[in-house]
Image 1: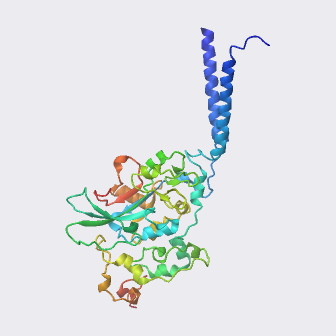
Image 2 (image 1 turned 180 degrees about the horizontal axis):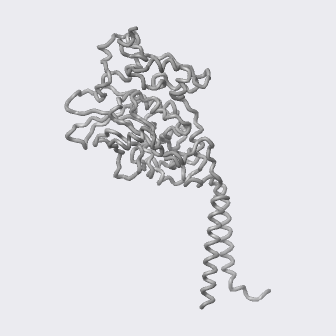
Image 3 (image 1 turned 120 degrees about the horizontal axis):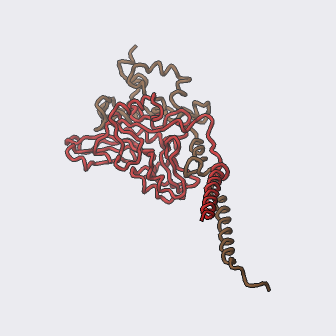
Length: 254
Length: 157
């Protein structure tokens, strides 16, 4: 009996040590090493964006700039960002009329039925760069992920084009690039923000309605704005950890 | 022949099959999964570098003002002051880098101004808006309004 217990403890100890060694070997040997660029520390940032509805004039400059910067096809359905126009009866928030002709690439034309007690405003939309992204959770091959600095990216080399993520995104922010047949989406201009620039849509916005924010930098004035104003995200009930913060967002926006 | 088969022969066979299967799994995994997969999470760490490698097309306000600081001076205190250069002039990172491939294009003031200043429900009332058919005829807006100092008053010396 005593001998059995000793044998059991010895075997268990061996098992734990050996599997631990295997895990370590996996981390350092098999899985390879991270290649972090010398000039940018991804762990020092946590990116998001602020959109001020009151400032958006629906000009579509952000849509055009995004397509130019990121080489996005000018075809139906291919949008990394787009602008919606809401026409809402103030007494019927649940049934807004929404239009977005060609994603507002050419802006908007005047509404046929002017006035009529309907309030009108513009809502720019794009990837919410969720901290707990539904799209990332469904990817079967690890082709999409949340980067250490809070940006949801697509690895086009690994994407199979299975479209799970397109269906999973509750904000409709993903599409299939017809050229590569892989998923595509807003990268928050990852190639720009990691070089100290702002995104192309923020660069092009004439009114400052869109602003990049680093949520790990308390001195960022946009971060300060978010702390001191009443801010909303889209579909907070889904607990996606969305980081696209809206100021003055109407309750009718979905 | 030797005596009866060992009592453990069937165990050895299964163990052998298992070892072959494990070896096959390791080889296939090694071939299919990139070496840097799983460093930060369930993805390829090199994808971060790939996402950074895309060329920049909008050079950024700072790059513009490096050379064109006089424009910054001329826009001080006017309503267009905070609009970044490339919002109107388009993506010019190549121009800022000294390349001849990206040249600043002549802008169409009629089209460009009206993208923002056409009257439209939903635009805030502080934004000056016009009905194109009723305002200024067909001529370019720049006959009266200078884009960097847009008020007519501001153009007078």
